[in-house]
Image: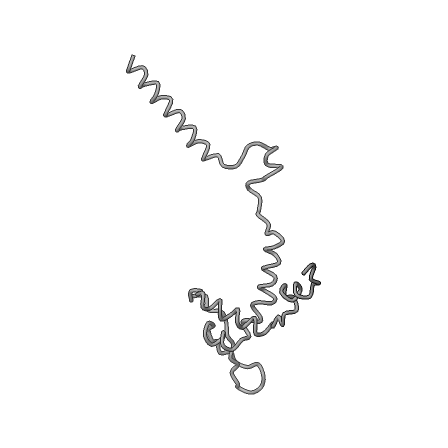
Length: 138
């Protein structure tokens, strides 16, 4: 009787474990109705916030920060290119150094350069908006 119980437990364990292994191998769903709603093989499209952030980084942040002389000298690699004009002048151009690791200090320096180029002047300050509101009570 004990041998029958242990055999049944071992057999049951093997069946359960075999079922777990097989279900992990069939990741794409064979259910067509489920695939209509949520296709696991489909591409993930970036959302609105990600698109806006990517556009801002490409069109506003990178050009502004990369033009700053301090950032260029400290974090970018200098590349000499031959001038296209008739003289033999060489033009200095700085490009992003891909081999260097990004540091927090680099971000702080780039943020300072961006803030210097785009001063806020408190136009959109929430503190100024709250101070300009009429006081109720008191």
